Image (cartoon, rainbow, N blue to C red; front, side, top):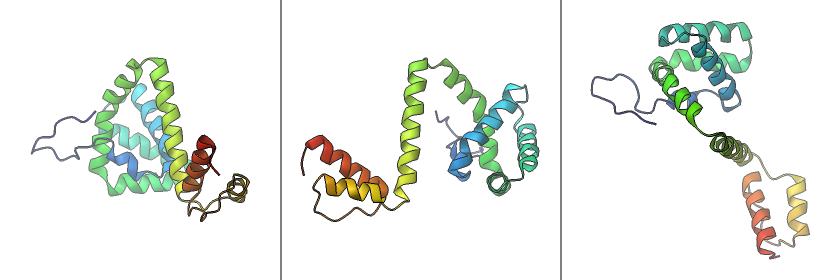
Length: 158
């Protein structure tokens, strides 16, 4: 939920914009790390950022290094996200379990589609298109190919 931003606010209007700076494969881990720090009682954004930095440095991985780089390059966005985190956590905790499950399922689907949009169609997908009788051009991405296969199966068209 976006909060109104005043002219004196130094932070971005989208408090979760910082997460887009963290590589997608590490976002869940990064967010979990921040929530763990917050739930242990640290709510000051500066202290949370310092603890995040320490934990990421201890990990010594490429993904952790990328997250550290994002923190160093975009400190205002990081601070806005850390300030928003308690509100987000409370909002999430108040949701019914079935809504949470639907959101998790939808997020997983979106992440899979983004991943597939960066890949070329697999041999299995090309074989499936041929099996379904598709004679048009093969789509350029795995995601497009998957959508075409789904459409062909739904419509019963060949």
